[in-house]
Image (cartoon, rainbow, N blue to C red; front, side):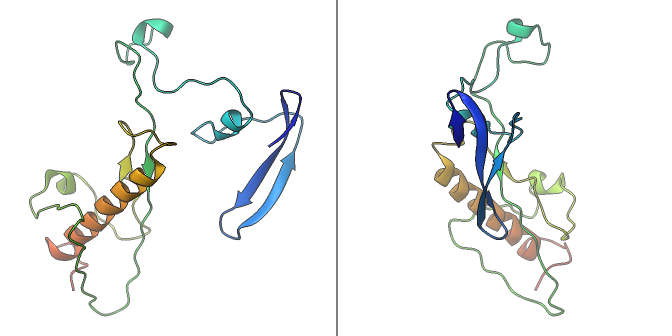
Length: 157
């Protein structure tokens, strides 16, 4: 982060696909990261969680403020190799049995992948990032086990 006093004049970025690092400079920055990482890194004041219903008279807000936040997800995608490939999940993977209501409510197309596996509250998405990653991986592998081994989803083998 490049600051001039309390004003952001540049943001250090990493391009995930290439791992190139660069700085974007400008006169105005809008933090659309979803997590407020630019504002947080600049030392700006911030809120964490959801405000209570009465603060802004929002009918769908919780009655009292809470720590509910956007969760993290892992995208997983698959590739048809043209022949059956077996999958044995690790013992710590989440179990989604054949009649799982969670799996019955989801559309199962293998391509391009899934974003709907999300973990957030009650975890802190910054302080508990590694715990969330582990929990996401546990569920992703459980979903894959279900698709491969727990029903007629077209990916068995």
